[in-house]
Length: 286
Image 1 (cartoon, one colour):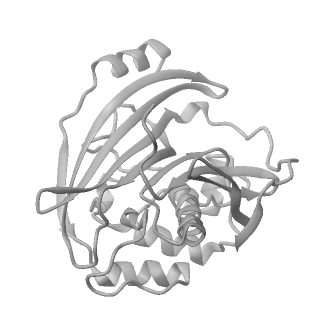
Image 2: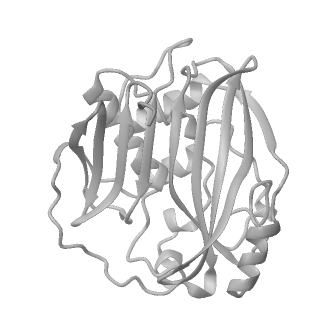
């Protein structure tokens, strides 16, 4: 697919919004708490920020899963043949927290589609809006940035290690092994093979090892923010900047605080993998 074809998709593809409903089930949140090694929220208790990632996951039959483990099609998936998908980051506003036991609706739509030339070829950048509500009242407003590219443009990474020294003082260290990545994939019904299929990730997508999920890296940063702020943050903005790999140490810590905003970074092997800004109040208007 050429750049003009990407441009055509960006100009014309606007899918209908999609809505799903379900419950904040105690069994699911208990499993996530166990994976994070933190106390599980009781029935009726507030759900910490970014824990909603494990909720209302799309149930996709195996016959509808592509060779890379992603769904072949879906409500918010662009009409790109043989595409590869990457999670770029997002913003989250917690209007009011979800609670364990809530009946939840999620309305999702494509907010923006644009094309960019990257080092590895043409990229399709899709911004998704997701609104989580309970009884008609907004609880979480989320924007997610997804990057798509052609499978043919994937080549060996330019470098597998970085040389920078982390400027943060780590408050948490994670060394996720294959079991950890498998458990998180199961909780989020994420069948992308880069997280569990070592031969595939090396031979097809040219990574040196299994890839740590981007939303998991962001969740570790959000947990750090909750610890440092002494309360659940209500506004999060984060960007995935590099890849972390299985069995490699990931350190999370604060990189400073300014105007009520806490800066958090996650580092691995001399690379900054996530940059997040967390606030426990709405940012001031310009």
